[in-house]
Image 1 (cartoon, rainbow, N blue to C red):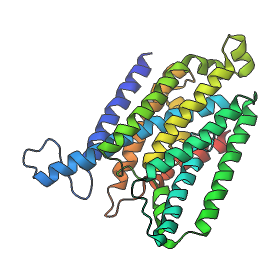
Image 2: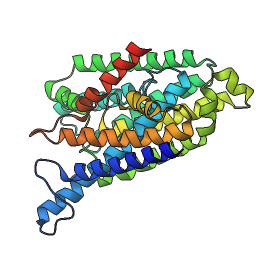
Image 3: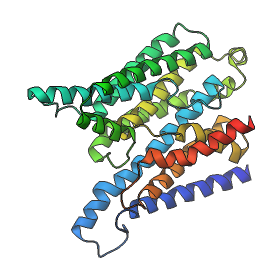
Length: 323
């Protein structure tokens, strides 16, 4: 217990440190505690740096926690927040918006009232509703996993089809979105993003106790009196809200949701969700903040998904080689 307390304290300090670094770092170094900041520098800190750092924290926590739930539900170490096709659905929504917008622009139609986050939410919601409908009829988690992957494959195929007929400008806009970005989220976007993530986190707390029962399989969980069908429905809904909410506003962010739960279990030597859940949340926030700091070190900031893949992919390779 004392060891865990020390580790949690260290993770909290690291998260705070990386948060401050993320706020300060960029094309120019800005300290929020300096007294001689110009009006423009103050606006950069308040309008760009601070919301970007807060978005990194929320996205890191949401993706990591949803990845932990997916790995527990399917008892698969390589499951992640996008396993059920939520990311593919969001990509399909954005693809429809960008490609349709490019098509209608030739007829002088404007889609300025629509935005990429709205399109991504609609696409992710469509896939999530389909998965929820299937989860009520499918009793086996493996079958649900396969169905989710198939929905993702169908959405991916439709995206490829739309790309084939897209004009270069629309295609470029879509590709830029798929690279992921934390800086695109402003204070106004957070007014929509935060409530979605909060609902997802509340659902996670509702299934915290049943998650431990699912570690030993569905039959064991039923023996403990856990309503497996209801728990699975809540897990899928929470994952859809968390992963879909982040993807809608930030684009797909790779490997965080798959790698971080393994890091938490390895550091704390425990599978108890009362420990691994907060640990996963802290490590996820810390890691994504670090990735964003590294992105900002370059003259032209790298896509966040590129740097997160450089961290996450070696961990996944290590998992495969070990297990």
